[in-house]
Image (tube, rainbow, N blue to C red; front, side, top):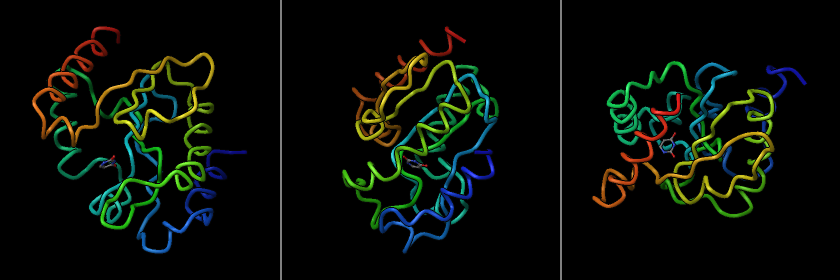
Length: 164
Ligand code: URA
C-alpha cells in the first residue's frame, strides 16, 4: 500500500458513522518520517473545517509548549487516534476508536517515528507498535484548564525536548 492509498482509505472511510457530519477527514500533518509523532483524540470543529490537526485553542496551547521547549512543529508529525470530528466534540466511542485506530497503527508502521507521544486517555488506548517508544501525557485541552495537568504537560515536553 502506498501513502496515497492509505490517505485515500482514511478520506473515504465509512467504518463508523462519524464521516456523515464531517467536512474533512483529518489525516495528520508533518513529515511522514518524523522522529516524533504527537497523537491527540479527534479533530475539533476548526480542524474539521480546515482538514488540519490542532489548529484551534488546544493547538495554539500545544504550539506554545513546543516552542517553549525549542521543538519545531514542522519537524514532527501531528495526528489523532480518531480522524473525524465527533458530534459536539464528545469523546469518541469504543467502536469508533476500534474502527479508526488501524489507520494510526499504519501511520506509525510506515513513518517509524522514534517516539510517539499519546496525549490524553483516549490516545493512550492506541496499541503499541514494537520498536517504537511511547510517552503518555495529558491532553492539551486538559493541560489548559487544570494546573496539575499543565505541570505534567510541561514536564513531559521538557523531558521530550531533552531527548531529541
Ligand atoms: N483536539 C484533539 O485531540 N485533536 C485535534 O486535532 C484538535 C483538538
